Image (tube, rainbow, N blue to C red; front, side, top):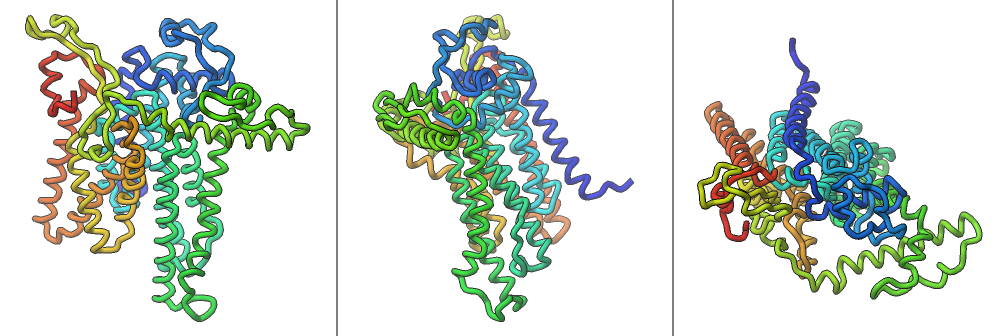
Length: 517
C-alpha cells in the first residue's frame, strides 16, 4: 500500500517526537530535589494552583516539600515575581496531574520540549519540501544537550522556545497559505483574515507571557514578515501587471497595506494574549498594591490612588491595569538596574562565546562519592553531575552553517534563509546589552532551533545542487556520518546530562576545556 506524502509528513516527525519524549522522560524525577532555579518556578507554579497568584514561601520550604509536608508553606503575602506567569502555569499542570514532586514539576518541560521538536520538524519540512530534512532537524534538536537538559528541569526557557518556534512556524505556514490562496502571486489579493498570522500573534503573546526576551523576536519577525511580503507583492504586481489602479502602488502605500493588518494581527493579538497571562495578578491586584504599592526597597510608591478604593467595576479595572504598569516598571528595574549589575555567578558567561559553548552551566553536582559505588579504582572517587552543555558537533557546525546562510541569503535572496538568520539574531544579539550582569549559556536554548534550521537548509541546498547520482550519494553519506556523530556525541555526554553515577576519571575525560569545569 502506498503511503501518501501527507501521512509521511506527519508520521516521521511524530516518530522523532516520541523518541525525544522517551529520552527526556526517562528517570525524570531524579534527583528528587530542586535544581537551580526550580526553587523559584516550581514553587511559584504550585502557588498558582493553590491561590491563583504567587505567594511567598516560609523558610526551609524546599526541605518540607521534599519531605512531602505541604501544610504551612505560605506566608499569605504575594511575592515579587520577575517573569510573567505564562510558563509557570504550564509547569503547574504537571504538578496538578502528578503531584508536587520532582517528576510533577518537570513533566511539563519534557512534554513541551518534545513538542518543540515536532513543530521544528514540520517547520523545516515546509521550508525544504522534504520530510527527511524535517526529521533531520527534529533529530538534531532531539540530541542537543542544552535543549535536552532544559527539557528535564522546571525552568521557563523551554516553554519560551516552544512558543517562539511555534510563532515562526505559523509565519511560514502563513506564507504558504497566502501564496496558495492567491495563486502564483502573493500580491494579487488582500486577505483580511489570515488564520496562521493570527496564530503567530497568539504564540508570540504566550512567549512574551513566559519571558520578556520574546519581545525582541516578535519585533524582528514582525518586521521581517512585512518586508518580505511587501517585496513579494511588488514583484507579483510587476510580473502580472494586475492591480486596481492600473499602476504599481508605491512603497509607502504597499507597506501600509501590508503592515497595518499585520501589526493588528500579530502585535495587537500578542499584546492581548500577554495581558491574559497576567489574569491571576490582575484579579488579586489589591494584594500587590498593599505589599508593593507604597514603595518596596529602592522602588518608589505607585501613587496615592491605591489608598482610594475604586467605586465601580470599571474604576477597579483601570486601577488594576495602572498597578500592573507600575509593577512592570519595578520588575524591569530588577532586570536592568543596579542590583543585578553588581552581582556575579560562577557559571555566568559572555554571550559572545555562547555559540562555541565556552561556559556551560552546572545545575547539580555530587562530588567525592565512594569509589566502590561506581567501580572506580581504589584511591579514586565517583561523582554525579548535570551540566547544561550543548552537543559540540551541532553547535560548532551550526556556527559555520550560520556563516554559510549569510552568504546564501545575499547570493540567492531566497526568503527562507531569513528564518534562521533573523531567529538567531533576535535570540542572541539582545543579550549583549546586558553582559554587565550574570547571564548564562542556557539562555541560548532559544538560539539552537534556528541554528539547526541553518544547518539543515545548508544540507538541503547541497542535496539539491547535486545533479548526479554520485554527488547525491556523497551528500547523503556525509549527512549520515554527521548524524551518527551527533548521536554518538550525545550518548558520550549523556551521563553528565542526567546525573548518572560515573567515575571521576570518566567525568574528567568529558571536560574538554577548563572552562567546562
